[in-house]
Length: 533
Image (cartoon, rainbow, N blue to C red; front, side, top):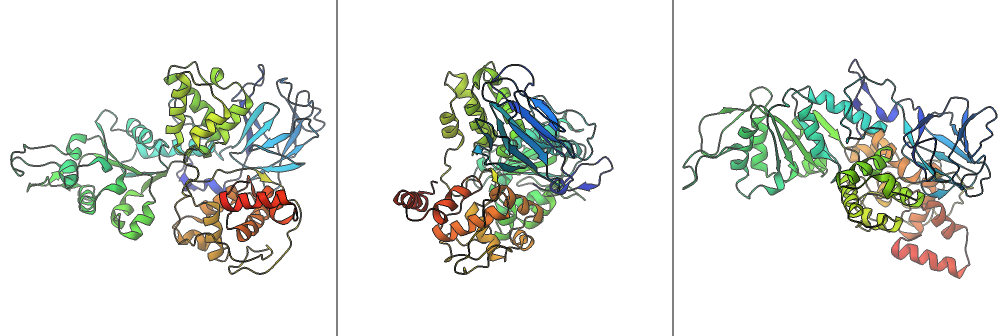
């Protein structure tokens, strides 16, 4: 996620490097009674939160959970790490276990922003407070902004709404870019003027310029004068979705029409220049910087558009908001809501931990299925939300950051240098060599990228036109920590497949800690051939 300006005096604040003040937000519990979902508990400095049915806190803060029959009296303790950007959860000998992103904690584990903690039937999401909360106009009810990414995004929307710069919305398909474009329009001075939405991939071939800028009468035989989209937008907003599908000649005219010094255009077949009065907002789910390097998208047009650039986070990065978004989607579909649809912690956990290939659009279609009478089960959620997950371009989901489980032995040196402080291992991996991977890259592509640049994150980020902080955050969310990346690298070299944080400990144990067992060899072959741990 890019840096967003968010302070009252307009100074740039790096969201990825801000002093973290993490908290737990309760998002689901099977049992009735307090605390209720959407309650927030900050993790105090110098103290921890002890969670349980009837917790004995000592010098910590006690958080009593509803009596669901799952939670132990004193179940788990959550405390802040010294560096302040992560939490530590300790299981206190609970009978049913403590889980982080669906993986049982063996003793203790780290908790980072956007991770899911399960204690009994209570599900919490880790969130982060802002350095200074602005008192801004609240977002619409159906535009959930509980998490830090979306709160910062809403501030960005309001700032851009009160300017006239062109805006470029980036993000995966189904993340809500059209909704954001409307919010920018509706919260600015142009709100009473037209909002004209058009998909560039649906423009008639060879008629793109005529559709955008209009045609004078009789220029095309038997065709009357036709207003273009720019003219129809008037003093309002022209929203061009799928901008990357616009052909180069139309891109050149678009650049001319929205020149900040003299915005004007000429209709097809016309001679008179007409003033451009509308504002331009565009969107795409493709890597525009890569397209510009390949010449598919004009670099000068991109430079003009990125002044107001917003990267819309995928749904899997918005777990604080997910169940509330699902509730709103169910009600729009005529269903009573999430309390009636999601009855078990297994179903709620499946919703929170799914990768959501189609993002908010997929959540909406799942809500419609439930409203039509289908029963919500974990299997149904996973089948619906993770369709096409075998495709290598589907982003990985951030998963549990397990604590280190012992030293790694060294073997033969690889062709690429190992990460700093990590023992070199076996033959080179079989995985693909990459230059500029689709974003975000798979774990294998990420390891290849880092190895290619001698494990220097800054150099690797520059090679794919990403910020160092963005790549650093992805590395952390994909592998968890340096020890886990060490294990992933070893497994990758041994098998040609790279595990993520959810599977790395198990797969590493299969390959390096459990030799000589036929069942283990079968499991290793399953990993090599299908990537199943």
